[in-house]
Figure 1 (cartoon, rainbow, N blue to C red):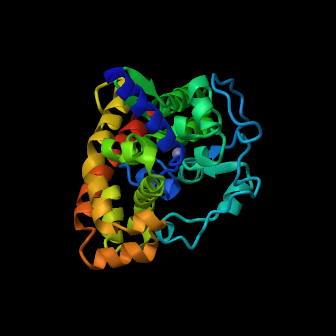
Figure 2 (figure 1 turned 120 degrees about the horizontal axis):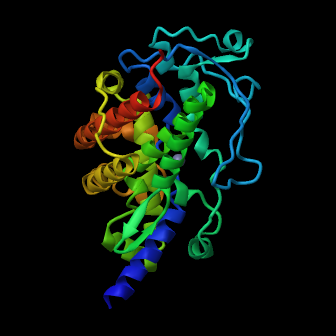
Figure 3 (figure 1 turned 60 degrees about the vertical axis):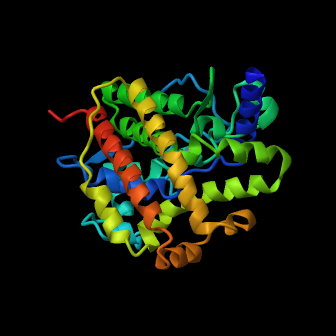
Length: 337
Ligand SMILES: [Zn+2]
């Protein structure tokens, strides 16, 4: 009986994740804030753009694993009017900077920390999961474990790119060292969005089996928390305080292996799930069953004081994420001699 229940739960989680393979919005800007606020870290340094010269143990969606530089090719424009970028004293002159084949460190993080969501991970290597899920990127951007089943590889994605980054730095390939590190941070950020490690409560997941509306509800709850990050960075009345929180958070260097570090991050995120999910439901209630929460909904809820607790919980979670991310950057990027 117990095994049947666990298998059932496993299946439900797979199905729920299938529809919620999204991630924090604003990976780029968040990572930019992290990188440009580490004491003594040279984020303005110019790095020579280099050719991709690696063989990787993972496969990617055909045609989606981009290895040229998007800014250099004109495929990605830096938004100079962006409120967050404007606030820094960085001079944003991408065209000039790139004309000699060099790119500043901050720009690598701004552009590439969001790249893993571009479709490159739409592959499903596990036979069982591909049977239920088809093609999705959920497995590489999430993590879950039920009893002895451990499935989804967000942790492995993080570890893979962290290793690639260290290899590149070791060879003296600074450009790819930073770029792979930006990818690795993407997965850390994803895993610390609690909906990436837990799609709902057990009663909700069981309801999901019999009631299609639960699908919409859980998907919108997940979306709402993704979008809450964008809301906090750009639209909230706390936006300056929130940005300041990210900037002022001190790096945390955990004296553990990389495997242990990402596992700790997952556990932290998982533990935060229940309180955050409660607050999302309290703040947006019936909207979640109907549609995606909009910026106006966030604004209204904030004015009515319905986001106070969510903000408190999120500050705690984002501080933990920020301090870990800063610690990882410090310990991965070689110190210039
Ligand atoms: Zn992602």
